[in-house]
Image 1: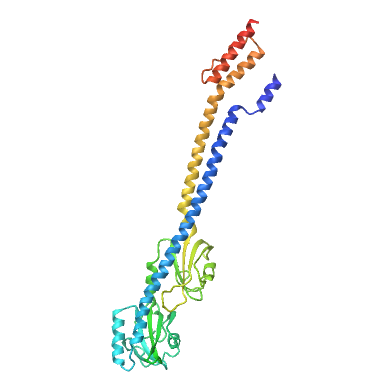
Image 2: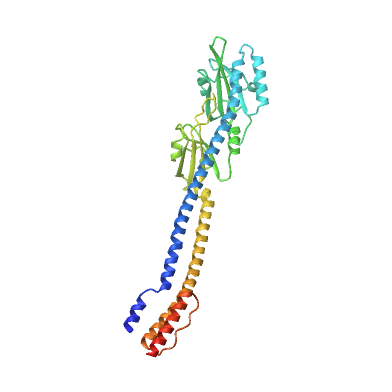
Length: 365
């Protein structure tokens, strides 16, 4: 008898198997479905983030390019109507445009030798601009020159806290026969470009404007006027938009969308590219919080389910345990007390009744 009890003690009971089996039947499908759901949710969140950044980047680049293109159309149209033989009229036109549109810091016309013939408020008239990039390139065709600090105009413009900076648009002035008579140049205030880019910012999203040499022209203050060497910057001059998940110099991981060109129609190229980035952790935090809440609720639900399962297993196995004890007692002593009358469920009641009848039969022998 002692050996049987020792062997019985080593075997798991029905209650244990019910709890283990029920838990596995609940948890395996729940964890599998939950893993699939949360994985799909995270992937979809990343896709939506990329779509959002790509859309904002394309919209920002398009808006900036179209606004610059409007100015370019004015410069190009003016270059076709300039009559160098009537400089007084040209000055009136230049001053009218400059007074009407404050985005122009300076507009001027130089002859083929680089001498300024007419300019905004007379600034630089008679001076030579022969070495300026906008003039040299403007002799051969429409051109755009990237942002630079004022050179010849530095002492003529009102003083600011920071040196004035411009981007240049230039177009050749030609006579009817097609010969180039000079160059019309327009200096656009860089602050206007900054204001445009600032208006395209959104909380948590950074807009960076890169030069052809991958220098940050606009963006977070710690990056402005510095060369950028992250993968997105190195890919900035490619022909198509790309998306990268990369670590930046500040040690944070960003989802970065690269818009390789800022251009529209016949606007001369500045060589710019646009980067739109967002901190990966911050962007995906709502999704991670949702996933964490999901697993917390699933875990709490599983714990409650296992507790209920244990109680149910206890409820089912208690009659069987009592009947098993009664059967062993009858086997050891036919005169033992009558088995407990079980009525909890049919199988236990039938087994209880059978033990009672078996005990009565043995007593009559």
